Length: 372
Image (cartoon, rainbow, N blue to C red; front, side):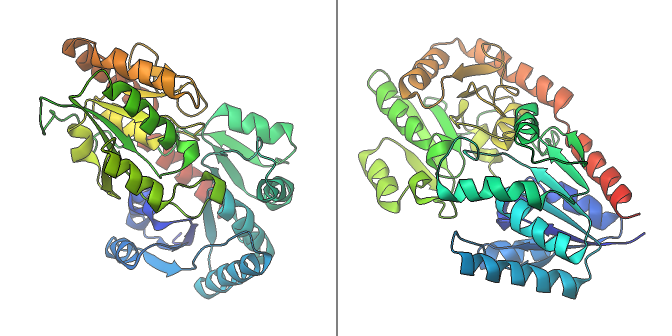
């Protein structure tokens, strides 16, 4: 049966990257796939070139009036599209989107891609989110979790009801697309690479602080940063353009900007660093590991499952720049053959445990069940 499938995302970037294979498979099966999201005009056009229909529904804020207008845009789009099923990702779509699909009676599959400070923060926005999750997920057909910690928290707080839940290995990894590559840039410079949104809870501040510490002992080290300044999060979690410019002017980081295809930059790095406070399942770590690069990340949910400490990289303490710097110094001082061996073991692990086919098969099965 051919379906009108709607995907609700915060931003089109994920559709263009980690979910491109899923949308491709859905279209190959004859389904019409429409993405309700936002992004730059170039990004939205890139998605359309992939064969997707795209509707820019903008994004919501904490303002109740803006949220109401956002929900009305979602409702109109889904009614006009005559959506048969909806796939929602991340916190806002999983709340406002699921409320709309429940209102319209559209079967919905939700992916809890990560919870960030949802349960730890006393910010009013997260308090509201906690109160709404219990209601918004009540009629959801299937809920995917990317790690057991997140699912246990949702169960503990009574957010889940009778729904079928399932653990999936994040977004999975296309290990053919992210194949090993020999380091391609200056082999005389040791390169640490950060890939991610420039948010405090992604560890960008600790990355910069650790870079300052390491540079006192090693001048031949480059700290490269890829990722966008991000304004969709709470103000206290964001990095300003002025802060970023100051880091660049200081010479502590090399800022590349926002790049969709990061493979050449992973290939030109010695180690990928993600000091995130918490993840669902980190796509950055999966991609780097698949390309046989050792990783340094925090000993936290969604990261420690991917990186095996001392085997495929190193784990550091959360929000601890000194410990992060210590792990950076440790990997610099490793013989090259040891780092190569770490990378090879990293690829073997993600192929074994995080094959993207596992994720796509889970979605196809759930879509078939929900559309009956």
